[in-house]
Structure formats: structure tokens, C-alpha cells
Amino acid sequence: MWPYHPELLARPVPRYTSYPTAAEFGAHVGAAEQELALSRVSGDVSLYVHIPFCEEICWYCGCNTGRANKVQRLASYLDVLHHEIALLGARLPQGARVRRIAFGGGSPNAITPFDFVRIVDALTVHFPLHDPVVSIELDPRTLGADWGAVIRCVGITRASMGVQTFAPHLQAAIGRVQPEDDILRGTDLLRGAGITSLNFDLMYGLPGQTDEDLADSLGRTARLGADRIALFGYAHVPHLIPRQKRIDASDLPGQEARFRMAWNGWEQLTQAGYQPVGFDHFARPGDALAQATVAGRLRRNFQGFTEDQAPVLLGLGASSISQFPDLLVQNEKNAGRYRMLLSQDRLTGTHGVHRSAEDQEIGTIIKSLLCRGSAEIGADRMFALVEVLTPFAARGLIETSDAVLTIRPEGLPYTRTIAALFDPYRQDSARRFSSAV
Ligand code: SF4
Image (cartoon, rainbow, N blue to C red):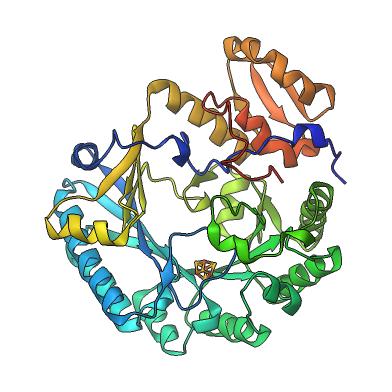
């Protein structure tokens, strides 16, 4: 078991899928900055396409998504998404090459396979695709057989299913009732369609969840042959995500129980042969994510840990975030305003943040700590932070030498907390972020 030091985990910290984090985004960055950044793009580019619809809304979900029950609303979203694809594609300079496409949401399979293929066609027409690796997030509850043919035709090789837990009583507690048959059927369908890297999202820290419940879900996942597993701690933040108010908070595991569950998960999955990836992902040794980890090529972006090396990620769809070396810019979140902007032929970036040289330097340190467990921080920075680093060093969680900070194996669950020490924006984060475990 990792050593438990609750006093070091008391402060809520970001997940650092970017630096600066989305909490630093402001309206001073918008379409003009997005346009300028786009005009400078060259080399490898990744695309993220956001489909903000789901058949059913899970009570815990923090994604920007809504119910796919209104045909007209869905159709008009897809219309403007096509328009955005054309607008963005036309602005991409020659020399840019799209090497990856990720479809996320929401649940991309909340739209029809026909509408999905139309989006793929539009990307093919408007973007310079260079044999891209294509991935998709899927809801196994609504994964019809027709999706198998589409996935094979499009050449999608990576898929991620939201599973969270196999335990029916926990599924009821979080508003995501998902019979195990759906997961088995989805797994078979995806393997048959040519998916070679299959991820399961799972959670610990659910209301009423026991260690045995978690072990059971992890065991079933491993037996089903998941290539990747993302094991997240459930973050109960109803003041930020109102739909979580439906979850009974009286039965949530406390911090110590969450800490133990994170350890149990780590131990069970590593013993089952999975390579730990960062602080909350696991991958089979043959999977590209595991190989990137071992080779020191692991990176982090808005989708979590990734082996994607492209310096630019372009977001398409309401609320999606584009990432440039010196800029982060988020599309309008509100679907109505997103539609309105596109109806005026305008790019939809409305919030974001410039990444100063200092931000980029700190971002490199944070990414390195999260992805590799060590970072070159320089003698000056080491000296400036000696006071806040001392409690971690004194407990044997980190070691420092030659201006390099290394998180020891015992310090893994403290990774985000240690990274946050380098983040000057994190002075008052008590309500905006989740527990560090
Ligand atoms: S299916 Fe996924 S994206 Fe949709 S509400 Fe549930 S957790 Fe959120």
C-alpha cells in the first residue's frame, strides 16, 4: 500500500489535461486569436470532433452533453458542425497533415451511423488526412449492430467504452443502468469490427462501492481483454455539475477509502499484467499507450494520457478546445450561440488563454511529472519551492538531485498534488477542483 498522508491530499487540484487549465480561460481570447493560430499551423495535426448528445444522461457526468431526443436539435447541430468543418479546413495552411481524429462527446453513437459517415466524408473533403489513426468514444447501451460495419468501413481502430462499474447497485446509484450483456455484446462487436485498442473507463469512489465491487469490475474488465483501462476517482462536485445532485452523497467513500481503492486498482491491474500509464491509466504491454510510456513518449491532452505527438489539436463542435503551442481556445459551449456564430460564417472560439513562455515552461514541468514521474525543474525554481517540496521529500515521496525532481513509486498518488506546487494559478482552488485521489 502507498503511504497515506491525508494532510498532503487535502487540497483539491486540477487533472491538468492542459496547462494553464480551463479554469484560467477568459473571454480575452476568441475567434481572432483562433484564426491567427490556425494560419500558423504546419506539420502534424490532430482533430477532435465533439458530439454533445447521449441517449440517456448519467447523473455523474461532467461532459457538455444533452439528450439526443429532439430530432430537429440534433439535425441543426450536425448542419453547423459540417459548416465548421468547412470553415476550419479552409483556413488550414498547406503543409498541415491530419494524422489523428478522435470522436468524443457525449456519445458519438447517439447520432445515426449515416450521420456519422457524413461527418467522416466532410473531414475527408475539407482536411488533408494522412492515413489518420481514428478513435471513438461509445456508449455500449446503445451500440447497435450497424455501428460495426461503419467502424470497419471508416477504418476506426481505437474505441473507448464508458463502463464505470459492472455492479448493478452502483449503476443504479449513479444513474447509469447498463446490463453486463451490453458490455459483452459491445466488446464482441468492436473486436469484430477491427478495433485493436479497446479502452474501458472505470470508476472508484462511487456511493456504496466496496473494495470487492471494484475488484470484481476490474477482474471482469481484464477478462474481457480491455487493452486500456482508465480508472478515475469519482469527483462529487454538485456545485459545479448540478446533475450530480441526484446522487446520494451520504454513502460516498471517504478519502482514506478512496486512497485504498486507487491502490487496490493499481495493484490488481499491474498483477494482471497491465503497464501503469501516468497516475490513473493502464495498458497492455503491446498497446501503443504502454509502449509510449516505456519509451518516455507519453503525453497529456484534453482526452487524458495519449501517445499523440502532434503539437496542434483542433477541436470541432460546441465546447471543444483547440490546443496550439502558445494558445488554448475553446469553442462556444452553448449550442444555440455556437449555431448562431457559424450561421454568420464566424469561427466559434469564445474563451481561452495565451500560453506565455513561462506558462509553456511550467506546462512542460507539469506534463513531465504527470507522464514520466520526473521533471527538470532548474536550480532557481527548486530553491524557490524548497519549502513546499520539503513535506513530500521528508515523507520519502520525492527525491531531488541536479535540479531534477523525481516522484518515487510511493509518491504516485500524490502526483497531481506535487504538480500543482508548480502552478502559480493555484492559490485558491478549494471549490473548483476535485480531490487529488
Ligand atoms: S453516456 Fe457518457 S457522455 Fe453521455 S451522459 Fe453518460 S457519461 Fe456522460
